[in-house]
Length: 142
Image (cartoon, rainbow, N blue to C red; front, side, top):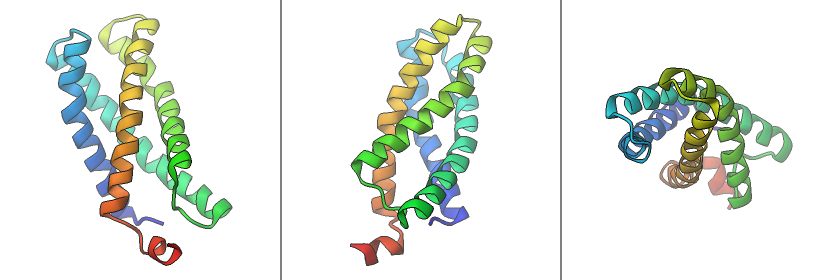
């Protein structure tokens, strides 16, 4: 399993790169001022970072207990990303609606758009992260 410091490096790098991509893209797509989109992005990233640390720890713990490893194939990575985004959606929806003064339906459309982006981004980022920072246990299983 990954160490606490590795999990922190993972979460911070994931959110920092995500913010650099999603803030200008969101402002452009949703026709919002960069400052408003920036606040939504940063607060969402802070919530997502905390969720990332908790979720990935629990997911790895469950994998270790049920499968005896934390190695993930393609199908399990898709399941991992979808479940992560579903949990995050439940928390972010009310915040986005209240902060931007929009309806829950508008906030849902915005949140789903970002969730779809982040699902693809999470899949690519996590696969790359595992390649750059592999765990020793994966070498012995190969």
